Length: 110
Length: 123
Image (tube, chains in turn brown, cyan):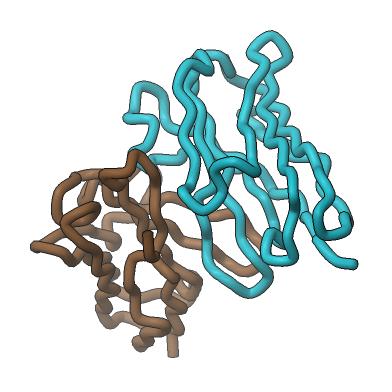
C-alpha cells in the first residue's frame, strides 16, 4: 500500500496560517476516522498533534487543528511561530488492518 | 516518569538478523498496545508493527510480514522486534511507541515514544 500523499514543503511567515494536506484513498482516509498528525523536530522523536481527524491531545496548542473532507485530511496551524518549524506527518488506519504514514511535509517559518 | 528505551541496534551485514528491545518504565506496561515505527536516514516515518496489550493481536506492515516478528514480555516490561533476512533498505532509526490508554490500538494516537535505536545494514 502506498504512503499517503503530502506536499514536500510548505512555508509561512510568523503570525500567518498554513494548511498541510494528506491525500489517501477509500481504503484509509476516506473510510476511517483514525487519522493522526505528528510533529517531528530534527533529531527528535515524533509528537502527536492531532488524533482521530480533529482531536487535540492535552498540552497541544489550540493553534493546531485537523479536519477531513473526502479523501483528504488537513492540518492547519494558525498564528505561526518559529517553534512550529518542523516536519509533519499524517497517518491513517487502513482496511488491511495496518497503519500508514504520509511522506512528510517540511514546514519552514520564514 | 513514563519512559521507553530502545536498545539492540547496530551494524549488521545484509542477510543477517537483529533483535531490538524496548524497555518500559513509569507505567503499567501490560495495559498498553505497543508499536514499532522506523525512519530511514533523511526519510519519512514508516509503520512497522503493532501488538495488543496482552500480545494476542499482532499486526505488520504488508512489506515486512514474514521477516520481522514483534513480541512482548509483560513480566519484564519489554517489547521486542526480531528482524531476519535484513536488507540495506532496513537501515534506519527504530522507535517504539505507546498507544494512549483505551485508544484503538491501530488508531495512531501515540502518546509516548522512545528515543530510537539505529540499525545499519551494510556489507
